[in-house]
Amino acid sequence: MSDWNAETYGSRWSEIYDGLPWPGPDQAVDQLAKLAGGGPVLELAIGTGRLAIPLAQRGVEIHGIDSSAEMIEKLRSKEGGADIPVTLGDISSFTTEKKYSLAFLVLNTIYALQSQEAQLSCFASAAAALEPGGTFVVEAFMPDPTRFRRNSWTQVHDIGLDHVLIEADRHDPSTQQILEQHIHLKQGKVELFPAFLRYIWPSEMDLMAKLAGMSLVERCGGWSGEPFNARSGNQVSVYRRDEA
Image 1 (cartoon, rainbow, N blue to C red):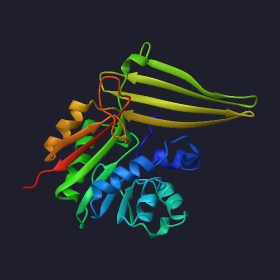
Image 2: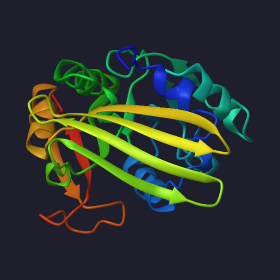
Image 3: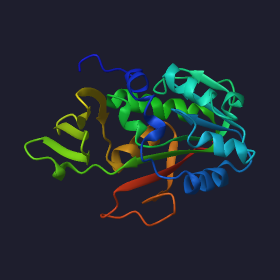
């Protein structure tokens, strides 16, 4: 477990990633295409192209960066995926020659960066990649420490005659870290799919953006634009790079 790094997610998850019950991309693609405003777009942690491919199909010029060669390979194997320029690199610290009207990071991936320093660096890298007045969008779940009992949590996600899927988590509130292990048991075979997260409260995220020279424009409870409030389980935060 101590060997977790940015590449671990791709090497462990790439073969099952597209089969996971992700939400449909249509609402996110609609909103991102509007925010792009006809300019070029950069997706941080582009993965297998869940959003990038439908954006490209709408005529959006999209580029990507990802730390996993396995995820990039999956993207390039799909129709239209090979036409999307993708850089193998670290989303916590990168530079681009091109400037973008929009950069985005979705599906909780900001939490995959393991320290506040790495998350701050990600915001700074994203801001530097934007045109003045450009937009950075971050989608993430809302932290809920109350679901942990004695700083741990276990749940059965799926069960059948010959399989079971269990999630086991350990929570450290002092570091805001959650160590997850998704355990797949099937016909005597055991597979482990780890995910180590450092969650961020919205106020902390806003401060990271401010330090990077960006300001919060809007925060919604999801891609359909529902209000963000105390009951929201998700957040879509829209930041704008300062003009100066």
